[in-house]
Amino acid sequence: MTERSNPWLAATWMMGAVASFSTMAVAGREVAVELNTFELMFYRSIIGFVLIVALCALSKRGLAQVRSAQRANHWWRNVFHFTGQNLWFYAVTVIPLSQLVALEFMNPIFVAILAPIFLAERFTQKRVIAAAMGFAGVLVVARPGLTPVEIGHVAALGAAFAFALNTLFTKHISRTDTVLCVLFWMTLSQSVFGLVLALPGGIPWPSPQGWIWVGVVGLCGITAHLALTSALSLAPAMVVAPMEFARLPVITLLGLWLYSETLDPIILAGAAIIIAGNLINILGERQRQIAQS
Image (cartoon, rainbow, N blue to C red; front, side):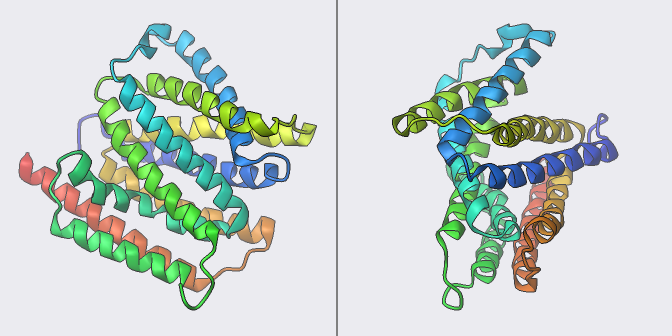
């Protein structure tokens, strides 16, 4: 760990990220009766853009920090993030929240699989084991052949894959650009994407209650990213990453409380296998960093 490492403060930030992601899932499901995913992403991104511009203006570097020499990488990052976020919001409405989060935990494993291709990293034995365990966990959660594999399961896995590609591009961009710069281009480009895709069918004006949920989605989308980034600035990724697994029990309890979703031990078992695969990959990464130091 570095001198700045503060795992307890990082854990506090991560609990904020978990709360934001969980709240956004509930808000996304509630507003789905009024808006489709493109419309929701348009409103969410507009709200986020206004907040980010305000934060940039108030920061020491001001709006000058939004200049970037990596515009192509920003473009691809936001294409994948926009795709993943739409798939995620769709999955929120059609499968239990616990299944969504369990399948979403494939994101770090997809990163481990794709990193050798995009970042020229070595495909280690632990990454192979992590990938195999992740695949096994997905089979346990979805149970193909025993229960129908729904489009929501495919959407959740697609979201995890798109978020993994987003992570890889973010690693490139974060070498030169600030967090606010990344969020500025994210909210700006995704406002345009959402407008273009939603406009042909007409963009409905949400009801007063719908606006509340849209506002919650927009606010939580920004606070979740800021909390996660702050946590990563206070402790190594290998310390922070396992904290995100707290989302599973939180979202499972929310599903039980708000939507009377059943507590399925098989889903929890599958999630445990996927989480174990992630932990093996994290430990392997730690050993690799120690060996290189």
